[in-house]
Amino acid sequence: MASGSGSAPLSSIDDRGERVQARDKISPKNSYGLRTDVAWEHGVSVDGSSRNIQCKYCLNVYKGGTTRFKHHLAGIGNDARACNVVPDDVKMKIYKILHDFNTKKLKKENTTKYNGDRGVQISESGKRKCDELVEGPSEASATRAKRSIQSNHNNTFNKCLTEDACLDIASFFYNNEIPFTAVKSEEFTKMCESISRHGLGFKPPSFHDLRGKLLKKKVEMTHKVLDEHKASWRKTGCTITTDGWTDRRRRMTILNFFVNSPKGTVFLKSIDASSICKTSEKIFQIVDEVVEEVGEENVIQVITDNAANYKAAGELLMQKRKRLYWTPCAAHCINLMLKDFEKKLPLHKEAIAQGKKITTYIYSTVGLKTLLHQFTGGADLIRPGTTQSASSYLTLGCLQDKRGALIKMFADLQWKNSQFAKTKMGKDIEKLIIEKGFWNDVLNCLRGAY
Image (cartoon, rainbow, N blue to C red):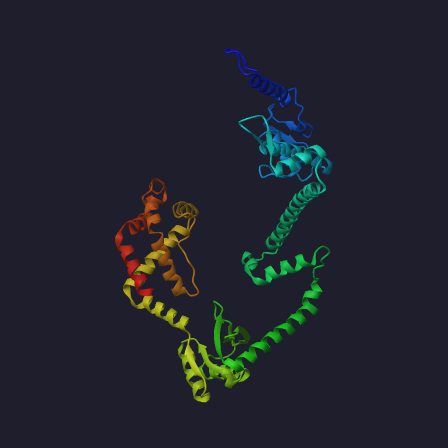
C-alpha cells in the first residue's frame, strides 16, 4: 500500500525504529555503571572509561575497548597478546562468544537483497554458516576451534620456554666470561640442536666426564679425521705452513705447523723452540723432520716467513728434498713492505705519526671519546690489524673514512667551548684536522699502500 506524500515509507520507519532500539540496547552495555559485557567479569576499568581495561589474571592493561580485551582472553587475533594465565574454561567461553559473533557477521555478509522484491539469496558458504548458527557448530568446526586454541596455547608456552632457555645460555656466557663470538661457531649450534632433540630430562656431562672418557673419545675422533686428511694428501699432495709465535719479552717461541690440501687445513703439531738458537741449520732440521712425518712424496711446497734465517733454511730444504719447493709467506712479505714504507718514506712516516697523535689525544680522555662518537655514530678511529704495520695503515684508512665527521667535530661549538680547545695540544690537533695538508698526505699514503 502506498503512503501519503508527506509520510515516509513504512519499511524505512521500521528499519529506523529497529536501529534506534538496537542502539538504545547496546549503548549502555559499556557505559559507566551499566556494564553488562562479559569482558567486565574478567577485567577492571583503569580510568573509569571503557577503553583501558586491566586483566584480572595477568594484570596487564589493554587499550582499545572490550573487543580487543576479549581477543586477549581468548588468545586470538593480532591486536592483543594472549593471556598466559587465564583459566581454560574462561578462554573457551570468550572464544565461543567471539565465534558466534563472527558467525552472525558472516551470515549478514553472505545475505544479498534483490532490487525487485524482498527475497533473500544466501550463498552456499552462508547456508553452512547459518546452519552452524542455528544447529550449533559442526563436529569439524568444533575440532578446528579446539585445535586453534591448543595451537595458540602451545605457541605461547614454547615462546616462554625459548625465552627462559636463552636467558640461561646468556647467564652461562656472562658468569664464565666466555667470548660472545663463541655463538658463531658450528659447535655451539650443533650442541643446542642435539640438546633440543633429546628433549626433557637431558643430563649434562660431569666434570670427570669432560676430562675423562669424553676427552679420550674426542681424541680418537680427531685421529680418524686426520687419517682421512692423510689419505687425501697421498692423492692430491699438500702444503706445509709454519707460523712462529713469540711473547712480548721474547722469552718463549712456539712454532706451529699446519698442513693444507683440497680437503682442508689441519693443525699438525707445535714445537717449543724457546731453547733453540734460531739459526738456519736448526730451522732446517725442524722443518725437515716435519716433512719426513708428513711424507716427502706428499709435500708439494713449504711456506715459511721471509726472514733471512727462514729463507736460508728453505734453500737447504730444497737442496735435500728435490720434489718440493720453498715459498715465502705472502702476508709476511706485505708486512715487510709496509714496514719499509713507514721507515724509509718521509711522507708515510710523517702521516702515520700525525695519525697516531690524533688518535692518542682523542682516546686519552673519556670526554673527547664521547664527543667523537656523537659525530661518528659510535664508530671508532682505530682498526687493529694482525701486525703493527698493518694497523698503522688501517688506522689511516679509518681517519680518511671519518674525515667529514672529524672536521665537523672540531668546528662545532661543543669543541670550541670545551676546556680541551684552550690547551696547546688541543689547538695543534684542531689545526691538523682543519688543514687540508694532512688529509692529502693520508690519501697519498693509502694509494701507495693499497
